[in-house]
Each structure stands twice: as C-alpha cells, then as structure tokens.
Length: 416
Image 1: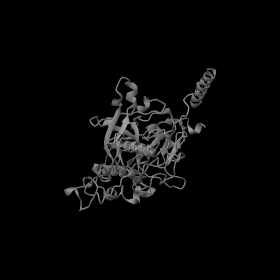
Image 2: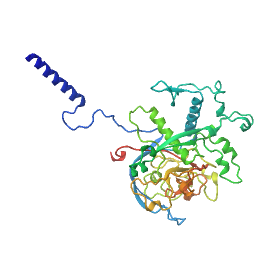
Image 3: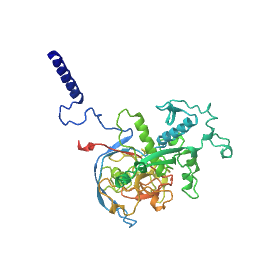
Image 4: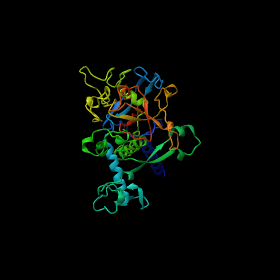
C-alpha cells in the first residue's frame, strides 16, 4: 500500500514538473513563452527613413499668398519608402496578376475548401493558362466585333477590375457601439493605366505616340507609371500587401503597404536637411556646373534641357541623402492625405494626417487629395519640398504617379 502511495506521489510530482517545464512559468509572471521572434523586415527596393522632427511649411516666399503651408513643427515615425516611383514594369506585374486571375476565373481554376467544395476565393495559381488553346473560353476578355481595331486581337482593358478592402480605423475608434462590418469597405476599381491621359491633358498637342507606347513598350519599363488615379494606387498597395504576405515565410505579418501621408512625403523628400527647399538641399535647381538637378520645365519651357522631354527613368537623377530618387520632378506623387487649405492650423503634431473618404456623389472639393513633388511639365516652384498641390482622387494624369511606404515596427533604427 505504501509502495502504491509512493508511486502515485512520484507520478504526480513528475506530471507537475513536466507541466511547469512546458510552460516554463515556475510560479512567476514571465509572459507567454514561445512567441515568434521579430527581426524586422527589409523590403526589396525600399529605403529606411528614420524617425525625426520636421518643420513643415514653405521653404521660400509664399507666392500664392494663400497660407496653405503655415510653419509647424511635427514628429514622424520611421518608415520604409520605395527608392523610386513605381515603374511601368512594376505596375505591369499587378496588371498581369489581375489578367491571370480573370483567366483562371473563366477556366474555373479553383482550389477546394475544407468542405471539399471549390471556393472562388481560392484561385489555383499552379493551374496553367494557355491563351491559344483556351482562346474560346477566354474570348470574353478580348475586344469583340466593331470594337476591334484593324483586326487586332487585343485584351479589353476595361475588364481588368480589382476588388480591394480597407478598414476605417478612425470611425471604429470614435464609434465604439457600431458593428465591425460597418468599418470594412470593399471597392472595385479598373486598374489598367489610363494611357489616353497623354492626349487628353493637352489641347492641340501631338502626344499619341506616348499613348500607344508608354505603358507597354520595353523602352519605358523603368519609367514611372502614370495614368493612375488615387484609388488605383491604393488598390496596388493592397495587392502588394497580399503578394508580400503570400510569399513571406514569417508567421506574423508586418504593416500593410500604403501611400505615404503628406507629412511623411515631405519629411522623406528633405532627406534630413532642415529647411531644405529642394531634396538636394540647395536653393537652386542647378549644380555648380550649371547642370539641372531634376526633370521639370526649366526656363520658359525648354523641356528637353534637363535630359527628358517627358518623363525619365525613375532613378534618372542623383538620390537625396535618404537614398530616394526623383523626390522632385519627373512625376508628381499621390499621398494618402486629403487636401484642405488650412489643415496645418488644426492637424496634430504627431504623425499628422487628414483623411476623408469621398463618395462618388460628394462635391469635387471633397475629392481633393494631396500630390507632392512636381512633375516633368511643372515649373520649379512645384518641385520645392514645402509646396502643396492637389488633384481629384478620381482623375488620371500623365504626370502623376506614386510610391509606397511601410511603417517600421518597433524602436526606430537610428536609436540603436
């Protein structure tokens, strides 16, 4: 009997010991063990912009006298930013992904869910799409009948529609009694670049060769994509996040790719130079040798003097001190921020950003989004780091592109 009791006590002791070893608690508050290790990320093609303080506002005389950029001291959290504007070839990866997803849908290439049924949300990307052999099933993706030009077999770009989602964190934070589903928004966007913008943006000007060639011709692969409106840029960021998560081996996901806020963009453009009117730090658009430092409209319209009649390659000029190319000129860039003339007077000084989800039936004023940096067709004033400008979120221009950012998680790299 005593031997049996001893055996039971030993068994209970070893069981308790094994349980305590498994949790490694030992009766102490040690937190949850076996958490994933976070070593940070280093996204390809992006550079790190450290946390810091920025004095925003005009870097020179306020020519418009509208006081839309009043001086203000703000602080910015560290983030990664694309070293160049998103190029035609990078955006083409997105277009091809949507194109292939449409083909897979037509061919019913889906994976089975846990119940054994085919789930349209689970595309079988391993399945092969043969555009020649499957031509009949894929015929709806091409122009038909009278829409065909010169008998060419061309894909109908208007069919390239992508659905993306975004979460309204501001509303969720201020409306605690609402249903979570009311904060989740889904939008469908035509994502093929508006190549006709090259013709539409200029009256009595011959730019048809750019319309026909700029997006698809290999000569322009490394040039910044244009003809993309604000929502198309956001859809690209959503897709890029899904692509990143799909191929990232870490169990935990990082922040989503997104458009930069207006303040982040200006902070990055200055490259750590306090009060710098241009990304290169000087007060002039030429260096000591008289060479132009950006792609813009110099003088009274000598477009090719800077080396490019239209856009140039996305890394066509020297980067600023953060390693960012063409933060002035080439193409203006979308930001996440809604444009209000007096926003500097009421925005917060910690990671400031002002957003407004403008609906289709809202006024045109409500649809204004901040663009920064100036473009190849702008005068030098718009190239200044403190100059604010805007475009309507649903418009496409041949001089507006974008680049993505990714918030850095944890203590800023420059503090180590």
